[in-house]
Image (cartoon, rainbow, N blue to C red; front, side, top):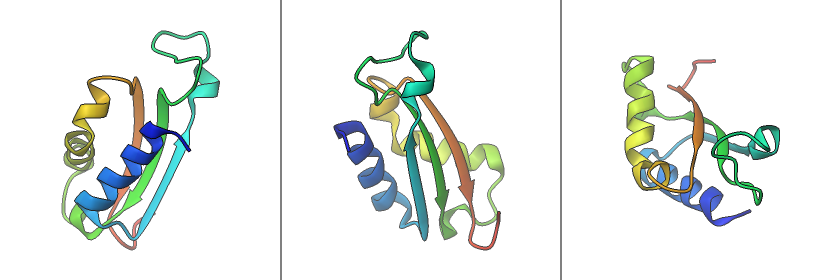
Length: 90
C-alpha cells in the first residue's frame, strides 16, 4: 500500500485501538474528478470499530476520525468516507 494508506492505518490504530479497521482506496472510481490523483490515494473509504465510539453520535464519531487524520485531510487526501462503529453495531 501507499504512504497515505499507511498513515491512515497508523493514526487510526494509535488513536482508537480498533477491533476492526478496513481501509479501501477508492480513488480509481474518481479518476478525472476534482481532487483525484492519477496515482491514487486521494479518496478512501474507512470502516472502523472501536469502544472509543460507544455512546457518541454519528457526527461526533466522524469528527473524531477527521481530527486524527487532520494532516492528511489538509493535504493529499481529498475525500474520506467514514463508517465509525462501537463494538456490536453494524
